[in-house]
Length: 113
Image (cartoon, rainbow, N blue to C red):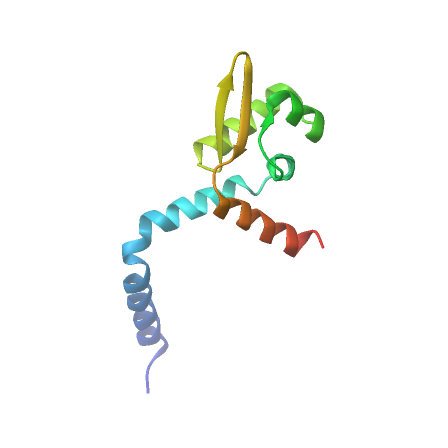
């Protein structure tokens, strides 16, 4: 009969094998999910769901003041959730890739239906 300690060791070994090669990916995923766990950033994601927007449009759509909005956009961009481009004096933001859009759609489906 296995003891609790040996079961714990077996589980730990299995997890090390399973996730050992994925440590960097797990950290990236955790950082992405953390950054999405703020109400203002979820509102930004909602506004960007339909496509690229200027900072001015995002301010209007989300009701978040420009200085605060810029901080949230910078954080989302630094974590790879958003990408941006400049055109003249305007900054445009969009969701970085289709997988993040799908993740956001799932979040929306689970919590907003």
